[in-house]
Length: 408
Image 1 (cartoon, rainbow, N blue to C red):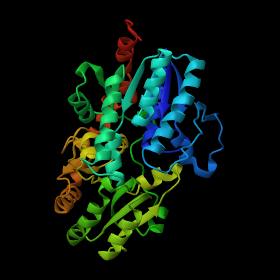
Image 2 (image 1 turned 60 degrees about the vertical axis):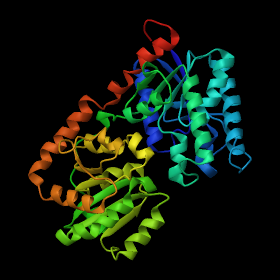
Image 3 (image 1 turned 180 degrees about the vertical axis):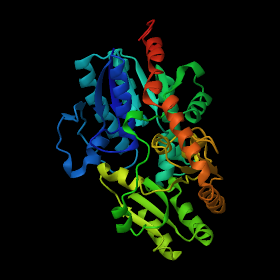
Image 4 (image 1 turned 135 degrees about the vertical axis):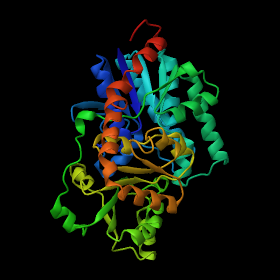
């Protein structure tokens, strides 16, 4: 079995997208399949000054075909059209050389539509894996709003790609239900759940007291978030809830590790509320150092706001927290409810409510006798249900159906 994957971006860029991609590739290789990998022009754009225009490169032992040709237009629609044309040209050249059994396009739809054209010309079946809908991501980024002309056009493009694909994969039940509601047969959509590499995670270690002191956290109870500061993550709600938490438990501090579009707004909110000595911003830290910061946190908080993106899509971070045997608190958006069993593997609070967040955090912190059972249940959940071996095991039957084979 030869599979040619088409990705938005890949390593050496670090993101939830690239980590999932690598896990899927390792899983498919473990099945004995040959995998090949092509990235879109957005990978080169993500590298910035480090982009060298190479058509191929190897990163950590993985070989990638690149599409270095960037769109020349800054105008919406025309820019995306140029990007898709670049992907189409590069993919046709690579697929003609490799002659894969399947072309496997991954979100966004800007990869799927060119792949479908190439697949039709070369008579290679194309499957499409949806990690999120492009139109919903655009809403969060502020480039459009739900129901706008652009939103409806983008949604129509997505639906067209879904209906033309030989099979559709997606990451969670929320997205699967939305896809089926667009008119696809239920047996034409397979969930490949987000998961973790159990071997890569060990139960949480002891905090580095020197680092804790350096950050002004000695003797404090730490609520933390480690990741990208996007609006949908709801970190503004965590800051809003902090005064109520402090009123009952003055030793609490909030540790925010990372950065992103909401960085400046969060710092302004913290200053306005007079919390500058209670919230620590570290900025982005090297990937190799992230574990040290996780070890400082007593309670990880994932306060995502409710919107289509968060109601439909499951994140990776709560699973990684459970794999480390950590205590976590999350809003009750659909993506979290699909992962976290309230009171068993973690605690959920009403999305969008700062008082609910504060009360849930205080309840958890007041009951340390319950923590070992919660941590153990979370670790057990990922070990048995949410590891990549289990997730990837859902591919062969769908591939076999696409290829008309008894087995893949």
